[in-house]
Image 1 (cartoon, rainbow, N blue to C red):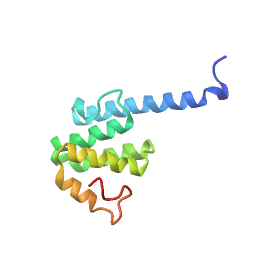
Image 2: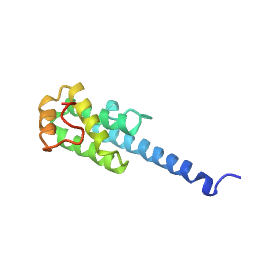
Image 3: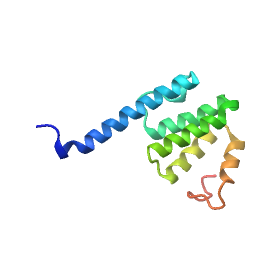
Length: 116
């Protein structure tokens, strides 16, 4: 028999994945671009894509960064992982002033200064 307490974890994972797919589709519709959130990518990969996409849309960057932070909060991405993802995204997409501002945003970054 399926169901019951044994399947709670599987149901939770499935529901979260469906939410992620819906959120990815919403981002693609909002920004009119496939690359902002490729389908069936992980939460971390999606956040990385969103942040990199900001390089191609500088006038919308503030809103794009807010969407990335909102997604990280919704899916409970740990602060350290989010910092590493942001450093990677900003550096890989050449958003050097943004990376500098991000590095200066906290007196003691949770990942230390080495990644910068």
